[in-house]
Amino acid sequence: MEGLFSFLRSRPVFWTSVAGTTVGVACFVKDMMQGGKFTKPTRADGKVIIVTGSNTGIGKETVRELAKRGATVYMACRDMKKCEEAREEIVLETKNKYVYCRECDLASLESIRQFAEAFKAEQKRLDILINNAGVMRCPRSLTKEGFELQLGVNHMGHFLLTNLLLDELKKSAPSRIVVLSSMAHTRGEINVGDLNSEKSYDEGKAYNQSKLANILFTRELARRLEGTGVTVNALHPGVVDTELFRHMGFFNSFFASLIFKPLSWPFLKSPKNGAQTTLYAALDEDLATVSGKYFSDCNIKDVAPQAKDDALAKWLWAVSEKWTRLTK
Image 1 (cartoon, rainbow, N blue to C red):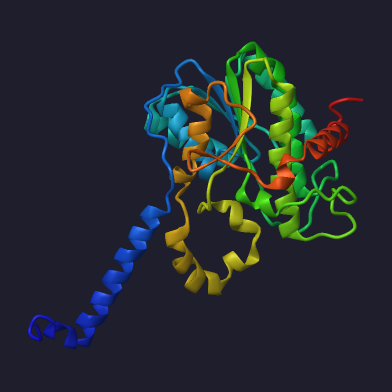
Image 2: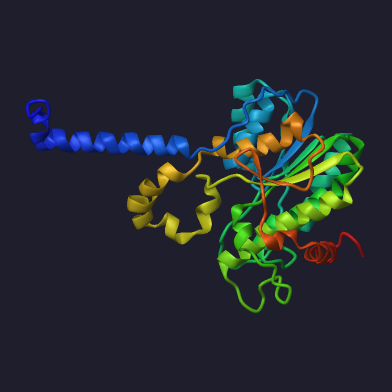
């Protein structure tokens, strides 16, 4: 036995062995953390789909997979240069030329309205709307209309976009709306007295509030859409290695790049795996009549108690209507 392990007495060999074992364990953990996968070969031929914020990360991988499955996909993005680069890559890979870039800045109600009108002029149907775009833990800033950015982009912008496209979704029924929320909603509170964070601002609390707003919106919209053939569900994509962390200074620091990022790498999903629950909610035939639910890792999950507050959901809906000027 002593002879068998004698090679470990050599320090270079020992540390090489330790490094190899560490990498192997990290890769094993990484694989285990990738979560559920949508493995059904469901096609999307003939379906018209919109994916917001789809030039990078989860959105881009969602578009890539939908294009592979034959869908006509509209990439609704703020940065048209990045959008065109992503579209070209996806078209070349999938050989699906029916992938389009259209400008839609969710921090501008005017841009959202222009996108919706242009889309309705081009297409007579909409089968799936995927509200994917989002910002996370950014320094306090405002949308064009003066909304706190996280609330404005993550909730208000998608609230307006969805409502402007509801007639197309109803005409195309059975159709679906998919809302990307987050497990962060469990830590969220709707600050009724300071919804726009004007009295005080905490970037984490504002993000959690916006993700809770996504769930409340989903549940209230599902109630309003009963009997229309349009379903709406929310989901947590997982902790995914995307540009969503770009506003968090710590993650862009030298310390983070040297120590934290390598240590956190095994626990982060890849964007491709982060898109799996989105694809599940958008395409799985078993969810044809399922609405108002919340999913994670391609399975239904319960939401936090505050996300079940129907009175709060109705209040938020009324405020959102007023702020987005959906109703006069």
